[in-house]
Length: 629
Image (cartoon, rainbow, N blue to C red; front, side, top):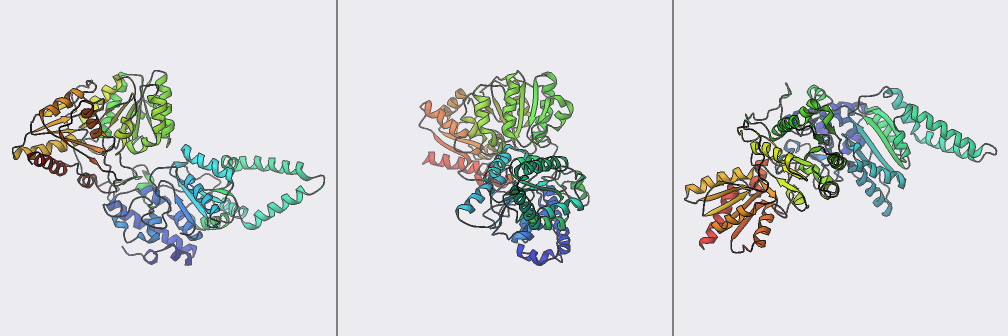
């Protein structure tokens, strides 16, 4: 792909010699480059397309990287990566060994902070501002927040602090959810750029000083002026809340007009104290399919540019997410107390159909996992059965609420934990590799992990009838194509199953790792090695009797899980054996080492961590050869 302007941009400094008209043409080229690349690699397309002009304007006006730009979430930062020296590597986006889909400090000095989860930018920026003050420096700090992130409590905590401190800080609210309201346009942008200009600011300060020092007029008139100003602000500006938090509110302005953006940013840059600039952008801007279906193209696999259709490999098996969604509807038809809760992920968690079927029993709390969990606790307190569907990586944000508000009182809340285990290309910030460890430590919590999508159905049925807090963790992607026609049944709590008998080796696995263990056992059988396969099903409570019996049958035991080893399923088995005095067995625990797992395909991640068929085979032969020695 050759571009007349983009090919000459390798650093933000290259932007600053361009006029605004040329910048606008560059925005078109970048948008084309992003769309064509992501159609091959997959990625967060819609948000990044919407933030191209904003990205160019920020780097054009501010002296980056000396001035610090903090991105929230990072979904919208592709243009930022492209113009900060990573255009030649952009085709490696989200691939093993390639560049991350999110800002990463390790990648570039322009990436001020690692991102991936929402609503952190304002707090990070507040810390940078205070550090600047302590170090007696004078650079600018800008936080760019959007994509729903402003609705989370942490964003307001950061604003509350920054409004109180009154230090120079610019927050850009990239509003890509609302349509552009009538007061957005040339007049609004012109008035905002004038009213935030240096002359206007000085004039207002001088008038106020004059009135305060004028006999008879003085403070009473100032109070009147403030009252009038407040009335006008509430009539014509949607930013009264931000003003009340201590911010000077500017906007909203059209985020796709570079002349507006540049002029306003140049003025805002000189404004003292905390400022919030409200920018309206359109998700998917420039690619029709993404504009029409921004949720579909928020995070997309590779797709066909001409049709917008995804190029995912078709499989007859439904996804775990789909099976969850269909099963919870079936259960809700039988049990009226079931309600469903998600945190801005109704489609991603499979609850979109539930929302249409039972609109009064469905709650989307936005990007507010902490609120969602405690909200569920309130419903459970009144006898309802809340099913809280949240990705594993995002449930981490509500850990205190799980402990304090759900588990401590022992309330019947069901956590449907999607994207548990390896999730692939989103990388270290999104892997669901900690939930077994962080949930297993909590009293009263029961934890299940299905080996396949059919077992997920029965675990959901079990969870409905199991008192107290329950967590079911299941992976991203398609199931195995199991028969899903059997009636739903309640599993015996804390009981696993023997999938295959054997005496030379035992593999105790949990979740989809059970099938990797079966594949490894098939290979071992060709060498005359008989392997017992145990599907643990329950991580808490463990099946004590089955595991002790297994330890009595063989001296060689492997545990396998898609979770960090510390505190996970393997740790639980070792703790059980220690408590039972079983100390003479050779045991190897397979799982994620003490590391963060970077972006790659799930298959590559399993191979790297040694929990695929090949890794299990290698560990099996190692433990057996040790026994012979």
